[in-house]
Length: 477
Image (cartoon, rainbow, N blue to C red; front, top):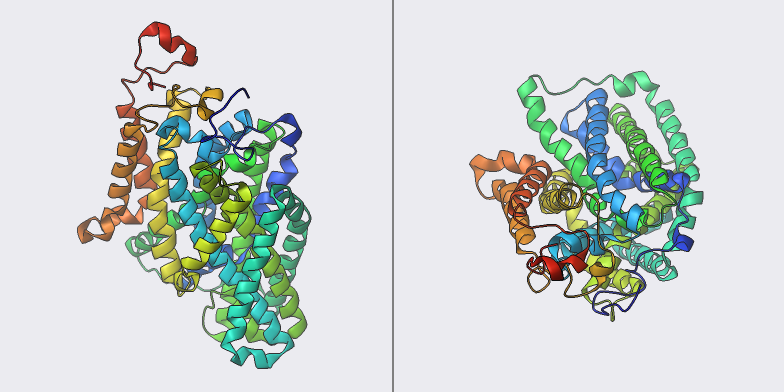
């Protein structure tokens, strides 16, 4: 790249070169298996059983939700693989060079919350392992907090080593996690007396209306679970060897990994009902009930590795780039990762995970209403307005076609605000609560349609050098 604006550029935000394009199909499959096989996925699935679904309804809901979110995932991934740019740079095309900080910060704040949640779960896993080895520690509250902070520090060390350590960690751990998960499933099947007793529980919904009343918010939660990564997936696909490798890897990895591991969560939760008389949605709590030291220890080790994988892959890469985008000269990927870690602590994850209702209907559905509108604007802008054509050089320079009004596209901001308001208004107006149940879908559609309408009068020119001779207002990208 030629001379670039240092307020918009650093090495972490720069387009990847051929030397950086090292991720093949297997790496993307491994990425999804490693990020899917972790405790929050298990809890997402187990909450369906705890809420009253039978296993078939739960599996179908999970599969449908992940097939839906795969669509914006692949659409937003395209630009990353084609141009080698991360999410905060891609979003400059629609929101403007400065306006891009708004959706980037929304995504970053949600990621910080997830980072805190995963760190809390990892700390619980370490504490549970200590309880297996030294039962007396179960009665010392300080042990849990020490384990939590210790796991948080481990995440910071991986962040400091950089993104390639993520690819290495995921490549070897994905097969191990799959094997350990299947061993855990076989063990609980044996304890419950086979699949029959585990999966024979009927649905607690006696009418279609009652089922749908629970189904749609849960479907929104399924989509919302990966609404974060559906935005910043370019942060990963910018390292793809080809479009084909990332498309095949994701199209196979996401639905298969999520459905497989969710089934394990569903089966284990059903087993807890058979063995203990109540559904236990936390695998850490469930493992503590069996009192089998060797099995519990190995299972908790696998939980710990899975949690580290997903925390770094899904909850550090994106916010690190997003915070770096605020001040590229001052904030590197490493510094952004450290900011993420400290904000994750400040968001008190122990409260976000206090119950499955808070986790599903408060956290997942709530933030989906913030991120769905961003996804709608990004997809409409890249595919329907620009036809996948971007001027990469201008994404790093002030005064070009992405300058809009002082670096901010007011049309994108207006569409974003409208989408968020419509998606979340149900929280404050009881008669419109049904809009909140569909928060991601409502926000995606509302913002996408409004943005398309507002941009109709904007002339899109692929070559910004033509601006000088056409008389079109600068900023009309």
